[in-house]
Image (tube, rainbow, N blue to C red; front, side, top):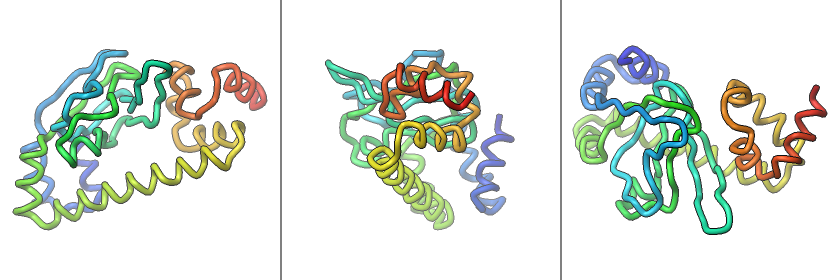
Length: 189
């Protein structure tokens, strides 16, 4: 398991010294069953997660509708960034779209590492920038692309998820009804 996170950091251009240091802190494993919550709305997020296997969904829950706004999958980082950064109750939930294994690091430990090691701080800030850019691009895509084009882009980026996670999560993420997703998928056959 440590091999995966070490490779992740190598792919993010951290030195072997920084990889060794950060991996010593990123050592608590959590197993999330399918449909089990890692974080519930109104809880404060204190951890950053590395997904070893599976898929974790970022969910906005309301009385009228639950909406998937993002997925974290193998070899990626996920958290409720607003709650994690501001130390306030989360407006989002994190739950297992599939059974998943994650490693976690506490905000306290991460902050300590960033204060001591500029390379780790640089990695974290670059991760936040990439995440923000990804979310903004997704908002643009949701408002400018047709359902067929949104699905096509999803397949290009995350095609490995299509046959493993429930289609209701994919349709929610793509901001379309399950019926529209079925019609769009049929047009690709």
